[in-house]
Image 1 (cartoon, helix red, strand yellow):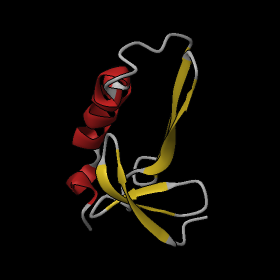
Image 2 (tube, rainbow, N blue to C red; image 1 turned 90 degrees about the vertical axis):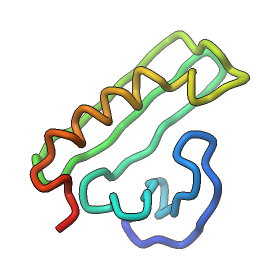
Image 3 (cartoon, rainbow, N blue to C red; image 1 turned 60 degrees about the vertical axis):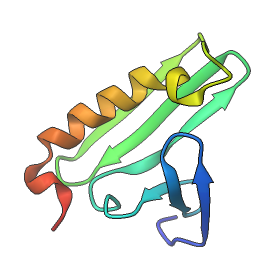
Length: 93
């Protein structure tokens, strides 16, 4: 699952690489492994932070701002940012 096989422009994270179901932001693959999900009316995030052995799962049954996915996932990405700040060495080992 962690083998990168495709690169694309993600609506939130810009250029990312995909494994089999996982997203890898360049330079962050050692600190954040997971994916965001969207289905009509529902948004989610499931990420693992290997250095702290922390799992983050966010399930939301309200999808606002569907014309702007950065706004739709703002709670998710803000929490992810807080976790990354607390990761030892910012994960760039």
